[in-house]
Image 1: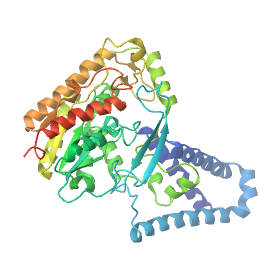
Image 2: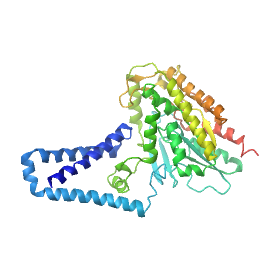
Image 3: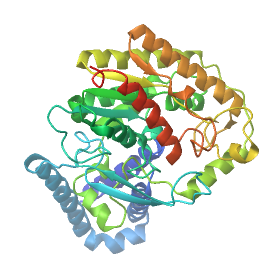
Image 4: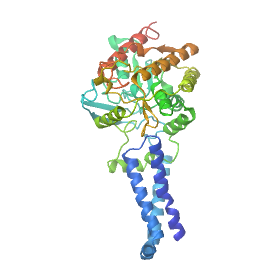
Length: 430
């Protein structure tokens, strides 16, 4: 019995390890916090029973019941989860859907913290697990899905304001033909490595006629955080984990997800925690306090980025999809007024949780221009469509509320540029 008791302590160890893996990948939310504290408490009490003789002697009569209850609970949850997966396929399975379908989040923000953002916005996930209209596209419609990071996701904009929705509205204006259906598969923090895994793994993407892809800024920021060292292997592991749900993540279990709702810890936000004003103020404050550091050598990072783009282009050709690449606009420039420069929080060098310092806005602007140039070069090499969006968007708060995220007017500007580009080409021009 004592051996079985010792073995049961592996359970809190797995819970703690799961939470630490989430922390390592910047996915440490409320659920992971509760799991970590519970696992540590369980392990501490369990070890105390083993190591403190008087306590072990006192609990000896009830030890069999503790072991039996623990193993019965673990077996019941595991068996139920396996049976539910086998006989009742879960529509919230993240191996099939990008986000948990049929969710709706209301966000409240201070427009002073995020210039150009409304005080209250709604983010809705449709039944396909994407942001966008829930209805099936009509036969003969032109189906488009956008792929990118947070600048594509538009987490802080209302469903009616995000630029992918405005592109769809613009293409359908004046009863244009064909009718366009457009959905948004942007995810905060995703790099070109993630985009490729998504294009290969998400079934709904294969139903589109065209993909609009905005890569770049997260590839740059990840290389900056790693000091210019190679990033491909690390990003591949993260992308596999995010796209395929690799590992026994407790937060993905079919039994744990309803439990999270009961405990007020879920459901999971669309792509992570919906950050509030305090989060932006804290990260901006950190940037202002830490020293300005020179950029690392980005030669290897740019070469890796170029290869990623070629891989995405090859996937577009293999799937026979029209791919329209977009360069990444930012607000970075060396002459930003101090009150506008204070809105920035990107550019950390070193781990995000404990950066050594931040790159200057001038260096960030120059580096982002190099990344955009690599995209334009790769498009020429692949003979792929590329819209230089960065050249058309103002570098001020008329378009963005921070480094690279569009406000309501910026989303309108982005949509206008994309609509003009698409309407001048097939299938809208016959």
